[in-house]
Image (cartoon, rainbow, N blue to C red; front, side):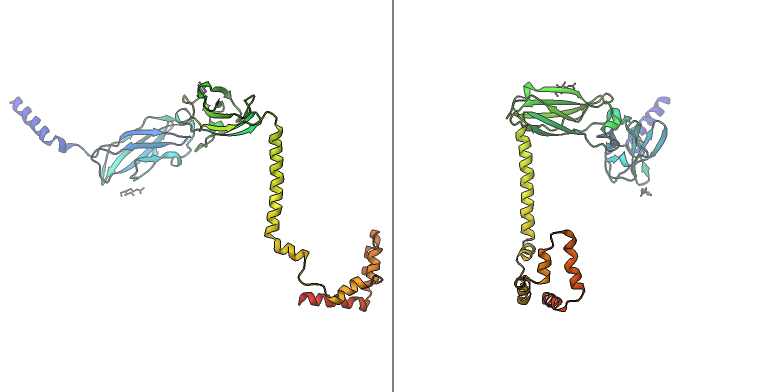
Amino acid sequence: MPAIILRIILTFSILCGPRVVSGLNGPRNVRVTSYNMDMVLEWDPPENANNVVYKTEYNTSVSDYRDGCVNTTELRCNFTSQVVFLTVFGKYTCRVRAEQGGERSAWVESSSIVMDKHSTIGPPSVSLVPIGANMDVSITDPVFRISNLRGVYNQATYNITYWKKGQEEKAKSMSGVQQNRVVLSKLEPWTKYCVQVQINTEMNANPSQLSNVTCESTTIEEETPWMAAVVTFVVMAMVMSLVAVAVVYRKAISHLLCPKDSLPQHLKEYLLGHPQSSISLAIQKSQPPEEIYHPVSIVAEGNKEEELPLEAGATNCNS
Ligand SMILES: *[C@@H]1O[C@H](CO)[C@@H](O)[C@H](O)[C@H]1NC(C)=O
Ligand SMILES: *[C@@H]1O[C@H](CO)[C@@H](O)[C@H](O)[C@H]1NC(C)=O
């Protein structure tokens, strides 16, 4: 008898088994990643999932789960802007579940992340300026989503690798460099050098991603050509801007130098033809500064013969 019952139960469970599967499958391959101190949860959809939306949550080592993305149809949630008080030293765990109609899958949890330890540090950028046979290397840190390189890793150092173009196997490295501006000295003149930089930190087990390889040619040994180039450039720039100004304002300038409206004939005659007039005499005598005001006082006393031509000139200008 028990054997028959067992067989019946077994048969039932085989028949009904697939249909009894409760609810929705959870998302698969749930992983949390961080690049330049952001925090992103990604996942794959559950098997046979249609019209599924997802809900995500995060917790910290001191707080319970809180909402992240809700009702999202994407397969990722960027927590960087979702987390309240996201810090680079916090420890976070994220989880996601699928929802479909009234059904909900079980939560699927990610591994936990400590951002200063686990975040991938992006590549620094490098620019080179040759100074004679030396090379000035400037390094710009990757931009972090929260804080900055020195704020997170105050012991960060640069590993600067450089080589003559085409001779990468003979590359030299300067590691442990803390300042972001370095001069590579005693290089060969007129030679193309390439530079690549990586950031090392003590907290993060992985060094940063490698910068782009940047190449630049050295010039000759003295620094004078460089200075001369700068001076030439500045002079050229000034000349060019003067020319540009002259071209743009050529009408105004030509108008100023050669006015279209010539002075009225009687005014010309008056100004040129009467060297004995009181104004021209005053101008001739006006070398000492005290006497500059002398002609003004004469006009103010109301010599009508002298005022008339000036008024005529003004009227002519207005017309
Ligand atoms: C998510 O979707 C459900 C069902 O459509 C809705 O009841 C709920 O209000 C939505 N939540 C948010 C935060 O939009
Ligand atoms: C610096 O970078 C070079 C080239 O990538 C590498 O061989 C060397 O081990 C690095 N040094 C340090 C201290 O990381």
